[in-house]
Length: 76
Length: 138
Picture 1 (tube, rainbow over the protein chains, first blue to last red):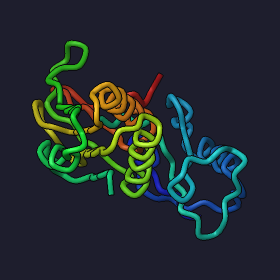
Picture 2: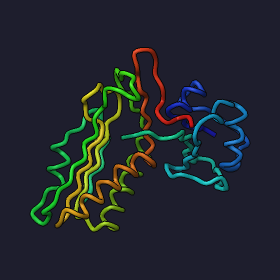
Picture 3: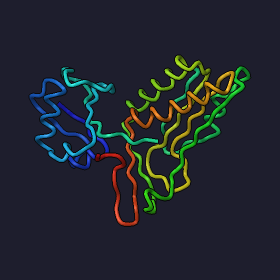
Picture 4: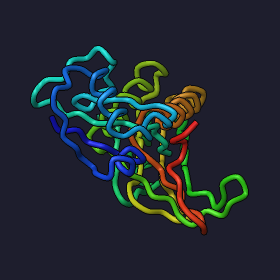
């Protein structure tokens, strides 16, 4: 499953997109991300967007979903 | 359409004003956000804005639609840049138009405050001795 990364999350992972396997929902994806990239735990927040909408931990991840890691936003 | 959301390397205050101004609106409130030349006493050389554009557009549309339905303004434009800007350059423009000024002020304030909280855009501040992603850490 392909996951997009932005901002500091992209810097931490060293790539704008990564591939995961065996993540069924948002909570599992976050655990996987924290295990792969422990520095993500130090951020003020870490949200996951599914199909361009903020997702809660219980949301399932399905093949074809557009998944993105959203570190603390700072526009404006 | 009574709302305009736009993300581009360069944005224009006049574009936002031209979009919202109409004869039914006696009050137009404009917010312009520019790059400041210092942060907590440190000189800022430039800012870099990264954007998850399709989601950012969607979140900006939600904000714009909410200001129209909740505050009763008639028209709103929200523009944001992507890429690099130096001090003094414009990075965000919000224009809100309503028959009377009070709700236009409220809508404009709501729009910029909410944009800063929900729209997936990230700002990297470059100083003379390094750079940081703004607000990333507690």
